[in-house]
Image (cartoon, rainbow, N blue to C red; front, top):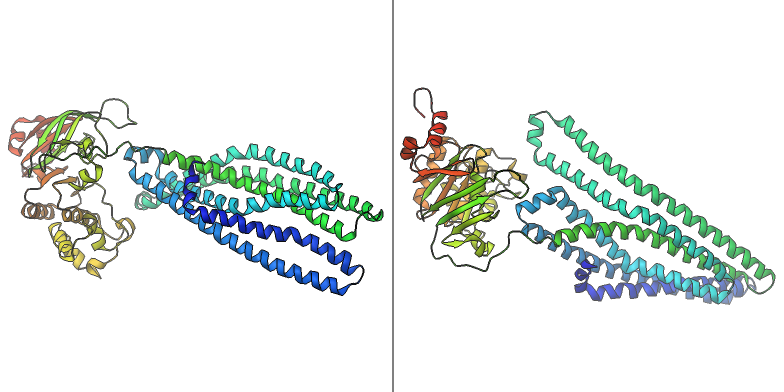
Length: 573
């Protein structure tokens, strides 16, 4: 019911669909009555005029019913598809607003399932509810009424068979309902394994793990099959049991009707009509039972979707601060730990101030907390304690769009999209001219290899940049950030695939083209950052020193250890 609000914009179509269905059902309920007239007043007395006239009426009403049915399908289609589109947009928007820690909690495979399979299940339920629910309820009520009009004794058949069918449906669905939630979870696992193997295909092949990953997928797929089979075994009982009751009811109607015909209290055509009506009534119950499957499946899906929609983003907009400075970053006694981690924090009591236009590097061993530190600047995560300031204002006080518009970041993993080279670079500035795109590529040392591509900047990039080398992907990612011309530019170990000559040319171009831009570089190689204004040394989550290269080399033991590990025996880097 929480999702019912998505149907509100389509209220008119949601009302017209069942109204049109009323017309179709009315025609269907009228047919047995007309057929009985043909048999009793036309065939038996051999009155051709009655056969023809009633037959024409039947054909006209069938055409009318067909038109009503088509209209009902069209109206319900518009309502259900619009409902699904709006719901999918809202869920996707909420997913985009979730923080990294919340996305990790749901898992990518699960979110994909919720945005596709779960929404489709609810959309189908809406479509069925607007048409088939109305149709079968009307068959149930209308059929009983028409049967009672023929003979009150037929009501005994309905009074016995109807509760039996309802009882069977309720009992079976009681056991089936919990299984749909289990099935959804198993489908999440299948999607997760598939997503991991598609995105990590190169690693799988490099380590010759195809067989083991196939077995892992087979295990997840087998668990999904087993869960589905449990549901199907239960539902397999439903149809035969309901058919058994329906056929027994038909036999009872024929028997009672035969006695009535013999006693000349009922006509043959009326018995035929009664058989049709009891079939319609009990078939309506069968269809409602089928709908109960859709309701159970959609109920499980709705819970999963509401779980996403009810999740408030941990990282949300502030009040809308205006920084008094420009291009400055400051960490004041900052500590940080990932939400799911235990033990010591990743960062502890960091104090660091970065001035406008400063070129500062962050260096440290693997796992020392370098990336975690810069992730606090655009608020990918929030500090556990202390303050992170950008342009003199706490990052929590900014609107996220305003804060992140001031920052350009090139991540460790280069993310490219299935689009042209120019379109990928324009992520930095969507209205950039072709000249600006080319200039950004030149700064990033990407223009040469892009120009040699078959269609230059219009060349298509394969999914996730699979058609490019690691260094090429990094350079396009850098071009995207450079095009943005941010106040603060962060390189999170994003030049690791570049040789020192290319990296030196890149940094020279950056100094020439982005004067006044604050540049923060995370790197593993001292050779990449020794010319920076200052180098901040992080060790086990603590800032142990921050000074130019020569000062650190003279007085910082941690820096000296890193330096010695990267120089040759002869003393040259």
